[in-house]
Amino acid sequence: MAMNLGGAQGGPVSEINITPMIDIMLVLIIVFMIIHSAAQSAGEEALVPQPPTHEAVPPPTRTIVVELVKSDGEHANLTINQEPVTWETLRERLVAIYKTRAERVMFVKADEELPFDYVAQVIDIAHMDFADMKVGLLTAAVEHRR
Image (tube, rainbow, N blue to C red; front, side, top):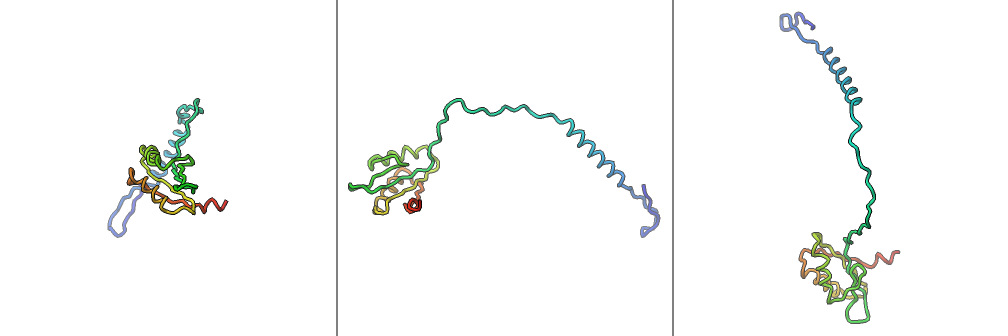
């Protein structure tokens, strides 16, 4: 304990010197940290992940691309992710693909020589059953750069 005699207050004032208390607390903190780190256990036993024993089924393709290719007939040829589809079965195929999906995004890619009317027909068929369908248009210019 330290004492202060006199001063502006006019009488003896006693104040506690906390410096030795802080020193003791710091030493105790260090001691407890060392004891705690030395007494820690090695942890839980963990099993190493094993490779699957059966053939894994690849996840379904998330990106759906409807491609319109110019043909010799009156309509353009259709493919969905490079699988041939007819104009009559396009709607059924799109319903089968999108009925279980929460995210409905479709890309349409067409030859440059085709009129846009064919692309509009594909978009209309997609919107018949799914009004929330988002449609992106792809250009063939990307493939010419290869």
